[in-house]
Image (cartoon, rainbow, N blue to C red; front, side, top):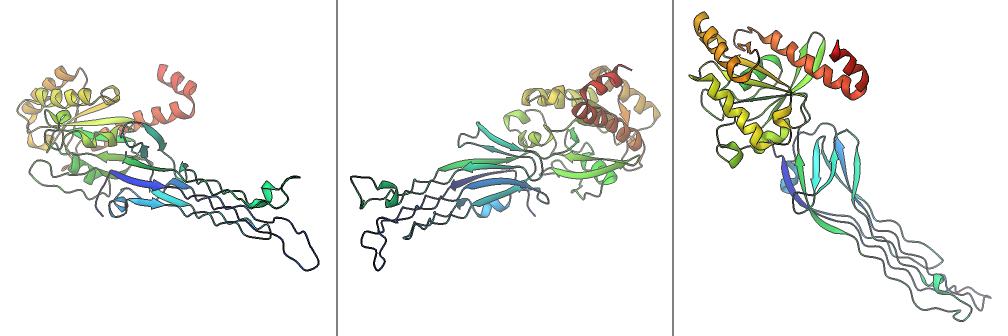
Length: 345
């Protein structure tokens, strides 16, 4: 299945059905009077977050969605049926924007969450509504109101607890493959990861979701390389795992490059908690490890961890460090006061 995180679609709700012009005609009833029924309401257009989807690829093959028109009214005071609704089913984490791709309409963050994007038009009144003392046999009825139409953008931001960031070939995909059941592409050349990957991590009988995005290079916020398009998928994460490859000659510069791109992108990414790790540490001897760890600590102001996904060195320590931040964030969401008290202790 191909990954697609943005799509533009056209939606239109159904028109209302027209009211009927009809008169009661029965034997022995000389003046039956009007009995035209009302038209049915047009169908609505809904969007719903469902489980089991992680891409918007379906909306590459179908871009137009139209709800049904309401059924017209009929004689004997019969009201027309409501037109059938249209439901756009999308992955959890989908945002809906207006045609300008900037004005947010809704953000679906939970399974089952629904939002009405376009309401169907009301049905028209039948001629029974226009009867009066001076007009006993009205021969007019209202047409149904037109439905609403619009072009909208669907934008997917994956729901994950932790996100992997770093330069290309920093070992992000290898780490994801070693700690989850995900099968990302791994190769010894830049940009082997062309779209985000998700995996479920289990550590100490607890679980969290880890997202891997394509590597960042200098100028990514201006579109260099793959650009910063996929950074939106780590906006919702609670913590970032920043991997700096031990193969880098200047690890401090590598760290600063990625941090600079996060700051240039904005949206609070540079303010998220960060776990820093020197990856692919199995390639270094003890002296080289100490030298690069010191350089990385000086550049970041924090103590970096040693990590080797190939030999599993430091993997548990990194996962537990991520889990601590995730648990703090979860507790903060469920009970802010308890989380503050725990943090102070």
